[in-house]
Image 1 (cartoon, helix red, strand yellow):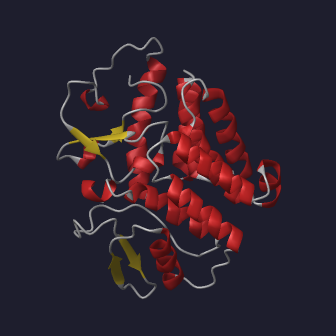
Image 2: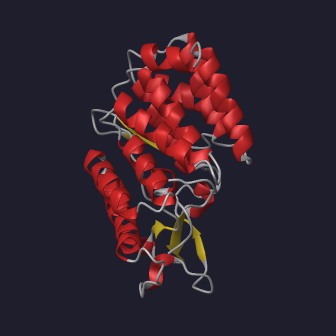
Amino acid sequence: QAANCSQKCSPALLRDIEEFAICGKIQVKVEGTSCLNHCGNGPNVEVASKDGQRNVVNAVLTFKTMEKLLYDSAQGAELSDTQRKVAQLKFEARREKLPETRLAKVEEAFGLLGGFERALKKNPKSASHLLVLRAQNLGKGEEEAALKDAETASKLVPSWAQAQLAVAAALSALGRHADAVVAFQAGIELTASAQEKRLLNKALKALEDKAANPGGKKSKQKDLGASGGPKVEVSPEATSLLRWGEEGVVKKSAGDPEKSIYKRLGGEEP
């Protein structure tokens, strides 16, 4: 969606809907879109029914609104009260400004699931989502812990692309760019959305550049977002596909969505 929707957390909403649907066993296909032309009313969600009808829901800004949207759009949701509370904590965490506040929400969610070890055994999908969220918000000096969380998440749910992408981000933050390329490629293979794959393949090129220049030699590619370059904005299509630490991991050259790439694949810009 457009930049103003991105500023209202539409990338985070994409992950919230995806994870809610997974844990609730809701049979829906969730993927990012381009601008829905409802600017100023976002974040917006387009719901497509089996009969081909499409409806755009505006201003999905709260957990209750998102929850109602999913229950109204799909039948047979199986979300327990605890899972619902965990989903709400993740929703809130992604909208907190400070990493430490996000991490506190993650730990609260683990507590609701009976603690870390119990969550791994009894609620592997919810645990994997929380582990990735925690890995994305651990700070400098905690890269090994982030990698451990991401790898655990990928083992819990091997088919989940976001876990593999989190592994790639943590490996790159540790300077293991060649290993990160392998993990990132695995994440792309597990991604169902063609649009997200296109954006991820652009990000992969930046990561491959890091692997080919381990000494930090500057690439000649202009769209890597070097300081002093063209004015950029957060890409709403893919911000949440791969995050590491801070907000705004994806950059987009102004006026050209085809130049969307990741500003950071862990660590500093190349």
